[in-house]
Length: 388
Image (tube, rainbow, N blue to C red; front, side, top):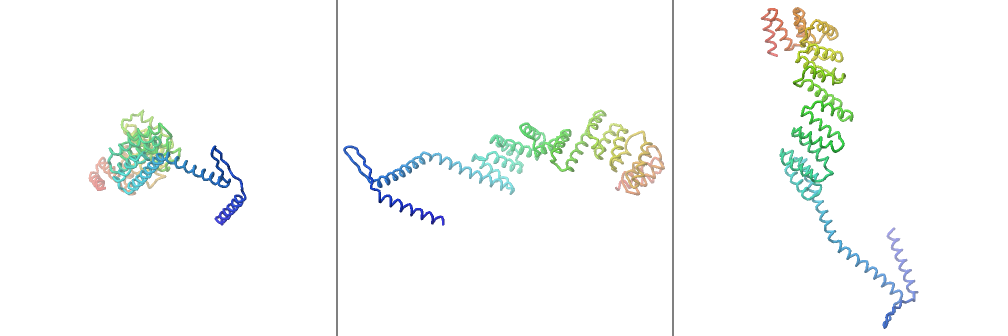
């Protein structure tokens, strides 16, 4: 319908022009002595329009000719861009297919074409990492750093991730600190820095970074708790701590974490290694008051504390609430043996064995029988412990 309207309009215009030109008797006279040129007005108008159209096309041709070198340069740039993008796309496909040597080759081609050089270098670096060619990887990382300033953060983050995979925690930490010094601390880079600090056993930094991730709700609660607990345990278990430094370390831990079984157990063992059984006993008692844990109960019976009677009384009070706890019965047996309460110690140890046969219960009974002169019974329990 639209085309038909255009055709009708063209016919109407042609008819109108024909009528006007048929009735037009005007003329145009050009005088340049000794010449005179006389044209009808219709012919003059036709020549004028034709001259305008011819001049327009001549100007267009000249302009196009002058811009031809720029067109050629733009065409070559577009062609290189297309080649580079094709090579980069194929290198990514090869990387995910596991064809790492081909990925490096294609990424190198894209890099040499001068388009997306930083991205191509990062793809080649990751492929070289998969081939465990770390020297080639470092070469491509250096090329990515030198390629494009806008890709600096991506390059540093990728480099840190690759170094972490190689377990070069110190170098990865240096790269991540450089990255954080120049911009915002993102969740991904904070998580990478957490892994680096864990690998370097910088437990105070592990705790600090874990707290930052906790504020951003960046990790599952269970995973975050596991990281914090492991860091606290490692801090309390490190060698070379004296009573003062151990006390400072313990007081730096929030009260809500001090009652956790693994942390309390590590602190108790550290105090026991320093010979301070009373401090270990208090730590265990406070933790058990918050949550019952059989491992802490066993550790309670191993504390080298002269105040065995109060501990026995406390453990017997617990026994009323936990009558079927084999670890508690074992701890009571050991405590009674420390005070040479042979009859009570034996009854508690035998009750522990009756509930759950454990190697430590057999060994404790064997030592008890040795001390009270029952050598055959002691041998029997030693053999049972060896079999377990």
